[in-house]
Each structure stands twice: as C-alpha cells, then as structure tokens.
Length: 276
Image (cartoon, rainbow, N blue to C red; front, side, top):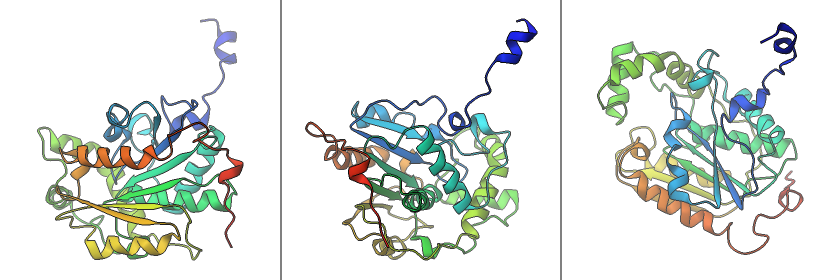
C-alpha cells in the first residue's frame, strides 16, 4: 500500500473497542451484557440463539481481555462505568429500549453504569438484571485478590469455574485481569444516591459462595421499581453450565414485555427519568 494511503487510514473509533463486532441496529430491545471478574464477552456467544431476533445482545468488552488484552484492566468500578456509559451513548446503543445484565462483578458494573447514565441525563434502562452478585453495599471485603496463584485457582474451582481441560493455561492467561477485577470489587464503595426506578430481577444460585440469599436479597433497596428473584441450581458459575438454559428462558420471558406490539421500543425522550 502506498505510504500516503496508509497515512490517510482513519484511526479506529475508540467506541468500537467496547463493543467489538456489534453495531447498533433497530431493535425492539437491546440487552447490554457484562461478564464476571476475569470473564469475557464469549460467555454470551450463544445468547442470540436463545433470546430471539427481537433482542440484540450487546456484550461489553472491558480492557484486559480479548482484543483489548494489551490494555491494563481497570481497578476502579466507578471510572470504568463512566467509560462504558460514554461509549454506549456515543455508539447509539441507547436510542432504542435497552436493558442491562451483569453477572457477579458484571452486575455491580451494570448497576453503576445505570447510575452514571442517570447522572448524564441519558435514557434509562427498561430493566436491570443482576446475577450471582451481593448487593453493592456488601462489596468492599476480600474476594481473593491477595491469594497466591495456586490458592486463587483452587478458590475459583470451588466456585465452579475453570473445571475443564486446559483450565490452568486459561487461568494463567487471565490471571492479571482476574486480580485487577477482584481488587476493583474489593475497593468498591457505592456513592450515596437515590434508588433507580426500573424493574430489577435478581438471579441467584444454590450453593453460591459469593452471593448468598440474604446478600442478594438486599438488592431490593436499589430500585423503587418492582423487584423479582429467581433461583437456580449450579453454584456461582451456573450461567456457564447447563443451568444457563433456565436463565435464558427467564430472560426471554422477561424481555418479551418490551418487544410486543408496535412502538414497543419507545423513544429515548420517553425513557428519560430525572431523580432527585
């Protein structure tokens, strides 16, 4: 390629890094998805097959994984949420009705993104889905970031993660990002603010060592909207095993209320919510 043509090639849009391979398209509802600590968007790879064509899945690619492996992972949840919120606005993903889903650290991040979007007077989510996560004010305790490599791997396996062949190699690749994510959760403190006003669904799992029923039940104080809880077998990492199909059926049923009939997507202006 001639040098002058190479020099004129535009730099990649920074917003593309957050949603690699996903472009905003008209959709009755979008589901913006946040993975667990050390996780990547690949956990949501087959979700479009199960949630149907009316739901656009928008997995968020955080620094320190996938095509962004060269970037250091953030250790500050609030700052990360602000970057994600800005990228969502810039890429037009909030122009149609949308919901947020997060598992474990991803649930905490989804909540903070909703709070930042409210501060920015952006369209509010139609629904917030949190999974495998204690309520925000119950973070700030040790989650294993200080453990040795071997002890941390043992802890992740106790939670039900990294059990297949090649697990050690996968763990070693993700270790710096996992430690950064755990530190972000350990140092997190929620900012004083009024509750959200969207419906909230809390997904929990039997035997979850990180998010017990009492801890997850306290999410109800974070919204003035309706709160519902659904409980599955499978432990903390139920959403990467066979029990994820039960989760996906419930998500599809919950999201169906936003995809029925003409005009179900609503306008961005209709969905702005100012709270004091």
